[in-house]
Length: 147
Image (tube, rainbow, N blue to C red; front, side, top):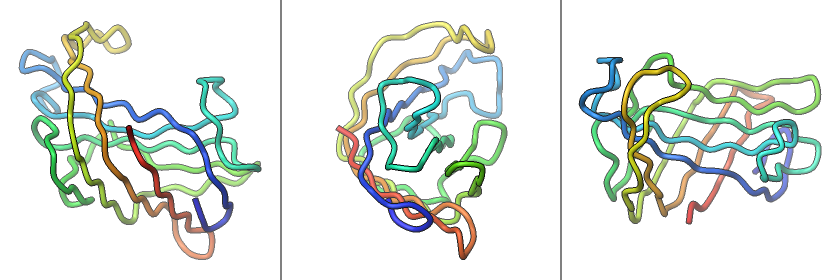
């Protein structure tokens, strides 16, 4: 990570396919991908020193497959978020994305217990991601490897 804060970090990188019977038609059949690192939520991740939260999520059209995705491949809507919180300051808004998916492994199907929207399939993704979040002078660049 570089920009307003710098340093290595560990994160979670979930991917969830909204099955064809999912109630929200705007995301049905598409995949939500994300990146999360937080010292606040105690989720087993470690952000860089001084950073409280790194959070990015978005929906990719269709089932995620090996290949390269950019911000142009994302569906706009309520499932998108991009923020970095450093102390009391928050930088937000995705400016650029390069998401190289090397492999995808399908996991279990389960019901969405949060929104009660229907069935979802978990995926494990291996690849590399580059995000640019926020505007200058507080812009943050994030590079991560998902494995």
